[in-house]
Length: 373
Image (cartoon, rainbow, N blue to C red; front, side):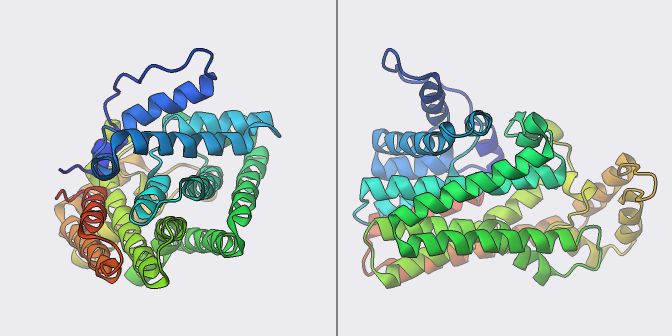
């Protein structure tokens, strides 16, 4: 089995199963999206072990739980979350479920844990969209475009509060973990923001930023799943390390796609990160090899005086220089090494988790990082 994050972004739509008469429209949309997701290789990797019906039911319950958590109090927030869920990949709940399936997989706690990580993820996305002034998220109108920046910030805060409330219902350890994870998310985003348009950004700073903004939530997803599955401390720690390294690999690959995929495939212009001043690993590697890239990047930076946007021609030239350098290959190798570390971390769980479950998690890591298996 194998895929790339490209394929995950644009899974072909398949016919959704029949639903019960009178089923709420939102639940119908959730079920339809689940049918789409089950055609993607990461979800197939888990479904092949757990069974398609079981995984579909659990993913639906996670999404329904997220919608339910925000549905009643502030209608516009509920509507926005429902719209975003219609295009989301639910990777973090998938990681929760995969880790829970490696153990006893207590369903109620697994579902609630999936709700926690998805709410945390959505809160970070809403705040990111405000910072980026994004008009769309997952192909639908973003929260800030729907309700303005002030209300969108409040919506992100509300989603965070709901995540913490659900986590605290699970227990003190889960509540503390959710809070610490969001602190790390903010730290990662702050590190990235502090390095915008900085060609002197170090690779260590890049790694620290993506560990906070992406990998920390992958690690927490796996840790919460292991806790819900009743696994021991050593195994839980091993699965958390697996999630951390997998999250690092996933973000590196995502940053590669920004440079190697077409605008139509990505749903945003190729080189978007360069235009926003986010110099990711392939760019940093290319800067070492092609010093002239720094001069091109200087032309990309928007004019802070008259507010002129980034020069699109300079963006294309910079992206071309990165693609023509060894930066792409170096970043791919870095992603491969992180994937190998993720799979190696599973050895710490082998004493409690059977070979079939280890194989499922290994397959999931391989396809999420776009390497196949």
